[in-house]
Picture 1 (cartoon, rainbow, N blue to C red):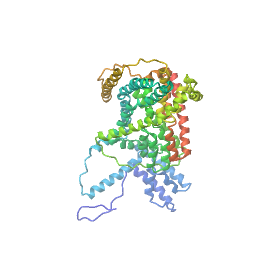
Picture 2 (cartoon, rainbow, N blue to C red):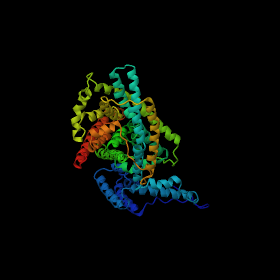
Picture 3 (cartoon, rainbow, N blue to C red):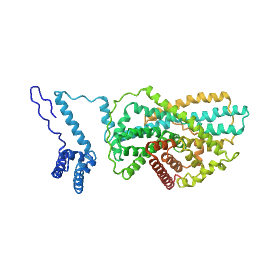
Picture 4 (cartoon, rainbow, N blue to C red):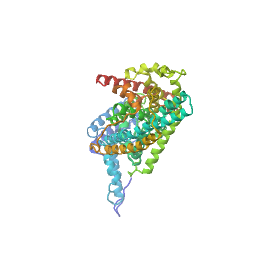
Length: 569
């Protein structure tokens, strides 16, 4: 390699890349040992190059040596790394890489005739903060907390509004029309207690999901999510992964199915398999309705913190499982390398953000109108079989759910209702709330005579209720964006839906949080398991299912029993 010199001067050979003195000392030490080995002709490459690669972590190159030479070189390498970690910690490879970039930069400056270095642009100045070694992770966690705060608080008024419209005017109108048509009582029960309680109980949470989709779209369109992948790369390398696995995992927060398919972009098969096993621990948006309804029922003042803690718990459990698998099943897998281009920061486009949120919301509604609709009808039939059963506790569904309920007794929810909700959640996680709505709300509502409001009163509730919800959501948005500053007095009036009111009598705070932990971590929906089978095979899918049965039950029991000791049961 040669450099360009001043005009009229002859070309001179460049000097070799020079690293920091302490790194050079360790390179020389390793090179000396490798030179001694190379005298016998065992090394087909430059000893200095090999020493640098070993210090960077390319341990696979040790396979060039046979025993006992390999053990001797491993011991010398370990000593060198230990001495370097005093000054560099785990970032020896970054220091070596930085020296190379400095060399290339100086070489380019000489070739350009000493042109002044380019000024840092806007994106570079921001990256110095958001990708900082110490600040990057806290900034990422703070942004995720902001997202969940928006979901819990800003969407809550619309959640109450939609619940009131579905359980109020819409149910009144449908019941009146069916009664006018002399429809059989069982058919009215199917429509109101089955379909409207089930599908309606899911659609209630559409405002919260819409807020989450918009927030994630803003982070992606602004260019931040690429930085988040870079920030988490060092952490993921401890799990046998790298930053490229971050993209499928982020997709897992929306839906685990496309996230499983997104692992195809990972070159290493072992990293792809490990990522596919960890993605189900990422809390998909289908679980959000469960978090919101229990958060409103038991943690109305700290619901955002509860939701944030659940997402963080999913990440922590995924990390622990990843470490365990990387040291056992994937013990001999080589580490991956993250290469990606950082897009420039830009102001998010309102059109792109709204388009993404709309597409995801339409997909959610379509799923509620097809798959969940069919599931609620089947579930209603099981609740009413043998035909004519008056008490759901005597139904076939109750019998099946009751058979597995004792398994969950140590976790605090050993009744047939929550056990049955977890069973239907295997079809789709939205079905957990749908089942609870049908079992609790449908059962209690069927025996109560609710005064019917007039048509004009129903219209008034719909119109003025929307205005009130919009005003309250606007106030909550300002509160979230101005932490520590109270702009509006909180009257804390209302906020409970029919389901949250009943849940408060069926669960305790300890059993409610244990139930949330189990919902967070237990077996994903059938569609996700099918995607795992298609991408990785039966064996890996069964391993994933086994892990996601043992881990959530264990943690749920620990949470509940710990809560009892602390007096929350």
